[in-house]
Image 1 (cartoon, rainbow, N blue to C red):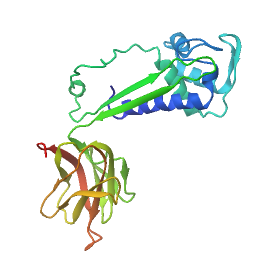
Image 2: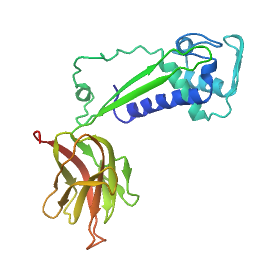
Image 3: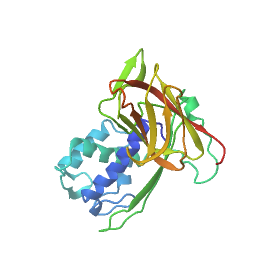
Image 4: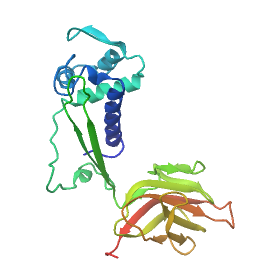
Length: 271
């Protein structure tokens, strides 16, 4: 379980580290749990988990190689790895020895972490991952799945993709998206629209034109629209995890622009 932003990025970096390890043929000498030609990653993690500047030390050894640290076997250099890539591998190795309370595989989990962190719009990111032990000459196989639970109201600037002409605006520590003109778009990936019956737009100031809500692409299926002069609500007909696109249309006056602060997803009864 992680919080959005830093925690989500950490999860992405760990997954990236495993991919780098596989690509760099590290598993021909190292396994996760058991020693092979070299020490296991768990042994390395236990040795260096509390040392000073250990991520930097390990990253440097990964790039330049070493000899005599774990017996006489030499670890070859990996000059093809950048400092950032070696750092991600080092962080992954050091994470193995961290003792964290696991989340039960079944049962109920109270969603109270956002309250403790004073984050009313906090997001929960669950990742389930598995790596087998591999064997000498056979790399460890890994797989994983993610589940992200978002609040009903999301900030407009937390987009996945954005039209390059849209601008992030700020005043007194508050942010919104401005310069949204005819044909401009915003995309939000993997939003669960199950039982969502309408979307409410938090516009900044008055607005004209139309907002379309499409799924699957900027020209994907139209599931709702709203004339902004009369309503900031978009009734929708869609369900399941979707790639959601908001597209602004105002062909009559292409110079008109709108600004968007937030988006709220409101539930309804079963259709």
